[in-house]
Length: 156
Picture (spheres, one colour):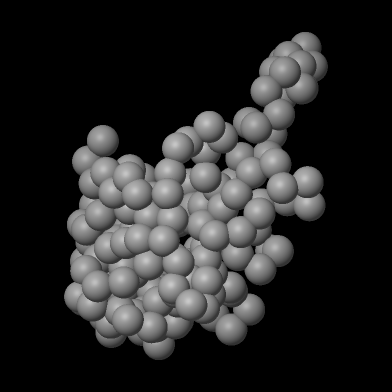
């Protein structure tokens, strides 16, 4: 009886059935970090931002003290060789934004800047921190589930 109830609930709410556990990863800004905007699927029905970073050789630690400029790491360990070096976030459907690109088609300014996408601007500045919660999609990217500026633990 209880198992049937759980199956019925998961059928009604498929996102619960496929929810991924996210882990904290900290990035320290640097000039070598690149941000790209791309179609999120073959039908071009949504877009996503991708942060291309260098993997730190050390764990970030709770406040990112182990990070060099332009690198990211999990708080408890460095990323391993099989983990991607791209953090990706879908741009919410209907969100109005403007993107300025450089000659190489990298994002140099994402506006508005007071949004949850502001990491695209902040992480281009050496020494600035951004904390992400993400999981490995096993499709070449770490999917961002939430994020905030800074390197501490955010109290909700």
